[in-house]
Image 1 (cartoon, one colour):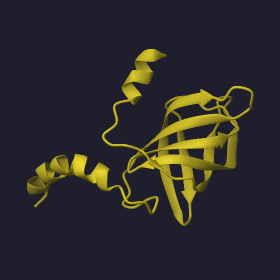
Image 2 (tube, one colour):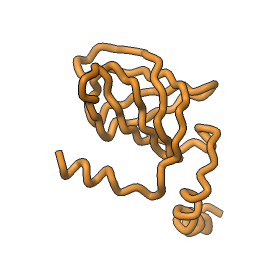
Image 3 (cartoon, one colour):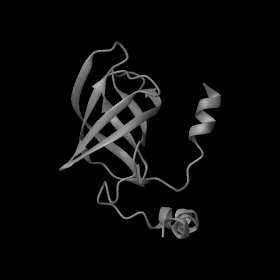
Image 4 (tube, helix red, strand yellow):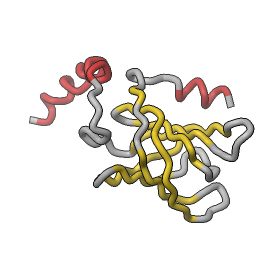
Length: 125
């Protein structure tokens, strides 16, 4: 499990602590469909860490998050069972980057990714 753990630790920017209520919908590790209320622990423009997840999921599973009026698709990148509870923390990566998904400012993150975005801009014209 350490190779996948080290691969997921390569972030483009720091996480922003944000405890927000979200609904998660998908299939658990046994293939059963589910939908439950959970919360974010921290967010980035292209990912999120969830807490209070009571279903075990598989890495690479796709789930849908509902936050306010938004519906966003994510892929599970890591799972951590919390000791002494039936809860999991889940790391997710967005399948499509949406602008201002969480209503949080990511200024440090934007500064680190700006050169990549500006390099792509001339080819778009």
